[in-house]
Length: 313
Length: 313
Image (tube, rainbow over all chains, first blue to last red; front, side):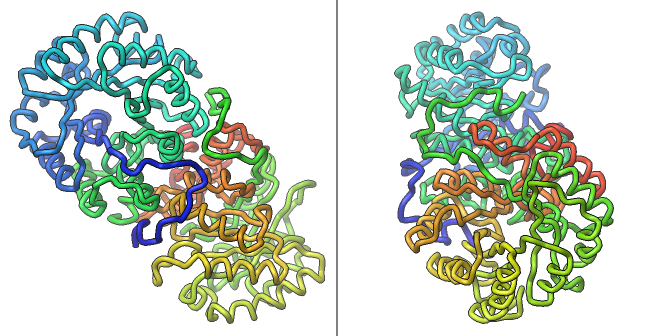
């Protein structure tokens, strides 16, 4: 049985939903970079190919962060050289700085993402920059990328809570996001990096962005399931008018055996909900669950996705 | 950091929320009856005591189902004899039939619950009755219980999907629920026993009950997290006006190592969301997470609750 087979509700009192959601699949990048195992490049290529087969049309492929920091993705050049790109599928790549952009351009990348922080402490710890200083690093990346015809997404991390600073002021998040949009980012991905937010806080932040003149079409949401809130927060964001949702096949990036499950929202759990809500997404859940079960075997542990465990456990 | 510390949202566009939610804690009954390990009665008593200490005011304590079917709860008489009941805490007990009611009355129980099925096949498999025939079994239980001054809750299982029949017609669920209300049940607990439902379907069923004249105050929701949908469905139910939510401390009843995680919504994950939404619940999350971590140790496996693993993993 699938959620869709239960029948679609005649009315949805909780708010309008988008007709279609773009699933921004981050498993190959955000997922694998947070797994303990380093996966062979051949497995990554098969993974991306299977995700495209399953109907996912945005596959964040890898990262040009220095291999010293993310050894899991040290094979970015080889992966992109061997990747057989599909028509209609985008393969964005994370780019931290100008050196990363050089590598991305050399690899023929057309979509990049930069990774900004909403908080001072995380900017210093993750980027070795002040909150203000990060923009000086991003500015030449975005302007050169745009001049080369690339599309640029801006991640905003720690949008709700920060492990060092605690609660994050929405005005600060909006200020950081606005600067990235003004700089030339076509979309912001608002990240609850430590997974603490709840639906009302999500709605309030989205409303704040709209009040600040950022269109909902330029906003994506990126939730982590550390406290089990990822899908509820996604529901709230969809009903607030967001139509791009980040998720990770099989919940890659969080291990069900680890002390805390800090993983991304699992794409399968998202797709199950979208199916039941009658929201189009273009994903073949069976193929996707097969792919995640296959990847879980490669990683030597069960998938954190509840749907994958229920369907393929 | 807690969800509450993030600050409460100024507006909640997705629908009104109740000011206060009654958490109907089912861990000691629905949780433990679905665990492989049989827990010693002393541990159960300490568990109930710790749950009351954590502020939970409705503790479904045990079941008078025949020990042949649920050996995990075969100690119901001893548990109730040794239970030190707290003022302001209710200890409902599941009662399947008149024999169970006799045992409950002898044990001094004041709140019982009966367990009905929304589908023909589950009625036959779980109760050995037809869908219609189950009411003949319940009727003397409810009427005698009411005559003795007991409060009776009616569970309705398989409200959305059934493993043998597939999708379940909402009209049939409403018909079963109405008969239980008319019989004298003060509250219905609408169960998504196999965890397949999504928020729009939840809202549609609740709206159907209201259209059929059943007050929202007489409805509780009972979600399983098999497909990761339990908390999103709860959010939808809260916004539709439900204010009693069933959940299980630490997600008891579902094992994170099992092939499929079929457990109840974890009370901690629910409380985290309620905290962030500014909905009162009376539960001390720290004490509850301590209790669930302690019980997970007794069961020899990690808690399925994401909050428990994040806070106490």
